[in-house]
Image 1: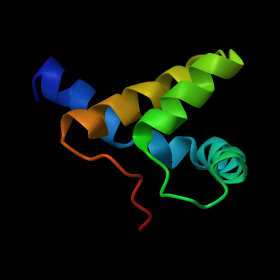
Image 2: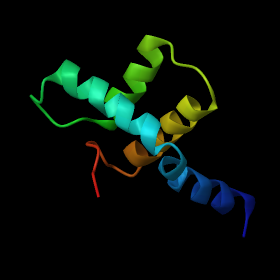
Image 3: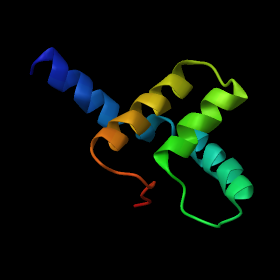
Image 4: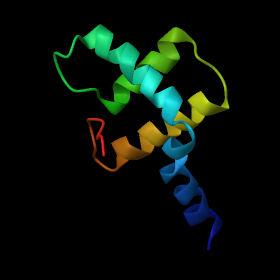
Length: 79
C-alpha cells in the first residue's frame, strides 16, 4: 500500500479513536445552534479553532472534517 493511501485510510478512521471528544463537541454545538439546523463539519473546525483547543486529537478531528468536506459532504452524518 502506498504512503498516500495508507495516510488516507488513517484519516478515514480518525473518529473511531476520538468518539468521546467528537460527542462532547457535538453537545456544545447543539447548545449553540439550538437545533435550528444540522451540525456542519465546518462548525466543528470553527469551534476547535475559536476555543483554542489544542492537541493531537483536535488536529486529527480537523483533518477528518476537512477530508469529509473535500468529499463534498457538508453536514455531519450520524450512523
